Image (cartoon, rainbow, N blue to C red; front, top):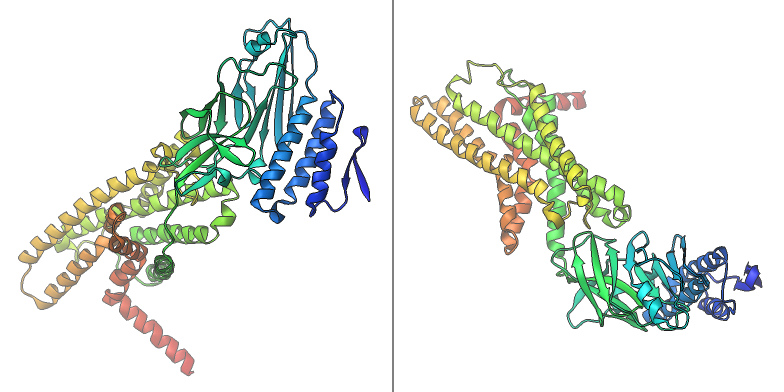
Length: 529
C-alpha cells in the first residue's frame, strides 16, 4: 500500500517506513529522480520534513556503516532539493526556511548585481561568509552564481563524531550542528578566497580539549583544507579552502575507568552524613537549651548542607535524565551554588560566635546575653550567598549547567564558588588558631578545681573537633588530584560534618544526653503499660 506524500510531484512513502530501511532508500531514489529544475519553497520543505522524519526512525536499527550510507544519501537529497530553490535573477535574491530538523538559506546574484559583498548567511547555530560576488564574476558567460547554506540539527545522529579517525584514543564530541555549503547551478565553482564558517558551540566547551574543523568525506570526518581561525568558550570560526559538509568536533582525553569502590564509599558516606545532619537538627529543635546558648548557626549549617548534599546526591543518581533538560540542570547548579555558599557563610558565623564564646570563657556562667540576634545572623547567612549567586548569574548567565549540573569551568566561572570559599576557609583557620591559643591561655589561669578542669578539657576537645565543623577540612580538596588517600579523607570529613555536629553538641553534651535518657525512659514506660 502506498501513501501519497507530495502529490504535486508524485512522491510516495511506503506504509511501515518506521522500521524499514528499504523504503527510505526508495524515497531517496524518488527524490533524486525529480526532473524539475525549480520547485516552490513549500514543496521543498515538505519533502525535507518527510525525509528527515523517516531517517530518524531507523537510527536504532542500523550499524555505523549503514548510518554513514544514509547520511550520504540524506546530504545528496538535501542538496538536490535546495538547488531547486535557485532561480535566475538579474540583481540578487534570497530564500530561507526553518524546520525543526534543518535550516537553509539560498542567496543568488545576477549580472546586474550592485552589491560589493553579499550579507552573511545565518542560521540559529551557524553562519557563513563567502565571496559570492567574486565567484559570479569568474563565471564569464552568465556573470551569476548562487550559494546554498544548510544547518542540520539532527545530522550528527547519522554522521557521528566517532567517524573522525585520529591516532590518539580520545573522546569525540560534536560541538556544532552539521552544516553544508554548495554552489548550485554555478558553472565555475572555484573559490576566490577561503570561506569562513562561524559555528556556535551546542555543548559545554572543555578548555583542556582540542577542537578540529572537519569536513565529511564519504565515510569519515577529515581536516584537510580546514583550520580553526578563532575560538572561545561560545563559538569557533573555521576557515576552509573548499565547500562541502562541515562540523566542529572536540577531542578530550578519555577519562579513567570509574572507581566503583570510591563511588560506593561516597554514596555511603553522604547517606550517613545526611542521617546525622537530620539527628543534629532534631537535637537542636527538640532539646531544651540554656538561655545563653546560640544554636542558630549550627542549625543553619545543618539545613544548608543537608539540602545541598541531598540535592547533589539525587542529581548525580538521575544525571542522565536531568541533563536532557538544560534549563533544569542550570537551575539545579544555581541552587547548589547558593546552598553550599550559605553553608560556608554559616560556618564563618559559627567560627565568630565560638571565638567570642571562648574569649569570654570566664564569664560563660554569669553572662547569658546573646551577642547577636538570630534574625540578624539569618540575614547575613543567606543574603551574602544570594548576592554572590545573583551577581554570578548577571555577569555569566551561561556559567551554570555543566555536564554534571554544576558550575562550568570555562571563563574561570568556578571561582564564583572557590573565591568566597577560599576567603571563608582562610578566616576560619585564623579564628580556629586564635581559639586554640585563647583556650590554652585560659587553661593556665584556671584554678585546680577538678570539675572545672574536666569541663575545660571537654571544651578543648570540642574546639579541636570544630576543625571539621568549621569546614577547615575542605582545604584537603585543593590537594586531592594526585593522592587517593587525601581524596578519601576529603570525602569522609566533608560528608560527616553533620556527624561531628551531632557528636559535639549531642553525645558530648551532658544536658542533652540526660534529656535523651529521660525521653527513652518515658518510651519504655509507655511500652510497659
